Image (tube, rainbow, N blue to C red; front, side, top):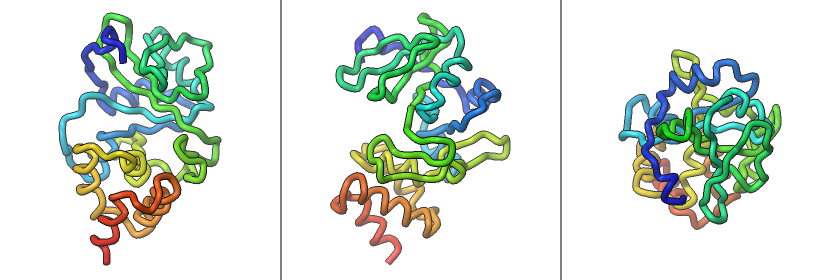
Length: 206
């Protein structure tokens, strides 16, 4: 990202995101580290940002909920930011948007756009990796929608960083057999059978 966009983050809390999106007539999910924490039942580490996943088809509705906000779309080729103005449709290649109340405030949420329709989510990384939308959500006691852990781990499995390895180690023993099977199939479809996490999954449950 350009230097002028390396401002501080002050991420919203999940309950604040819920308040912001409570009028949403479309599916959305808190993803990233907050989703992992929700599944394991504890905070694994501090979070510098908060990710909100939604379907690309619902981008205009999401932008309306952020009326008046400064939303900046990241160009995946250059890493540069471009304003996402109200009414604009983002290019198909854009899947990452940083949002804040105004240009002088810290960043508050990061929107991630993925593919799909009312019934089916489809990974932007591999069209063969899909999931019914109704099976994408883990709700907490307050009704906040979090992304299910196997889908979150799928995205982390491509090029795991240290924090991703930490998440994987915490989540894997807690996954059900169907969750592990879906994750294995998704990793193979998108990244191949040589992915390092596949071996760990096999060794843990043989």
